[in-house]
Length: 103
Image 1 (cartoon, rainbow, N blue to C red):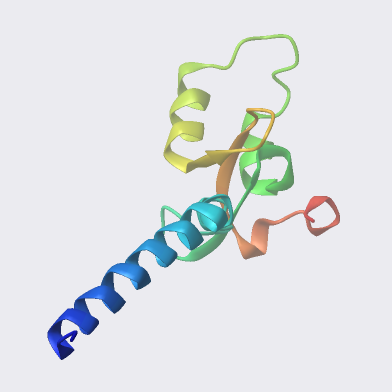
Image 2: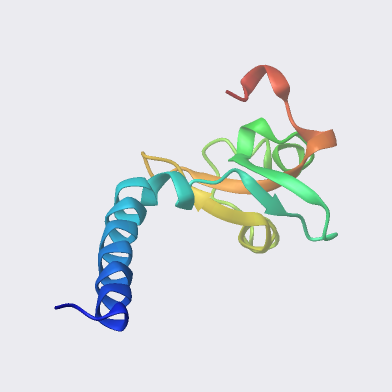
């Protein structure tokens, strides 16, 4: 006859297995969370560079020219991820979002 301790252990193992599957299933959703913290420690949103006015204004106009070292540092400091095509995403304060471009 199973003991209470054995049943609890079995329940714990089943719960852990199921939660691992759930985490794996929704891992992409968790990783792609759009919330982030800006350099000023304010809440922001992780968006493509051209969707953030303050950052895109600072790096705009590059055109065919490679980014300057200052621009590279700025982008690295604000980086919070990449999209499905490998385009850089930056943490942008809600005040600086170009809302027409954000999903």
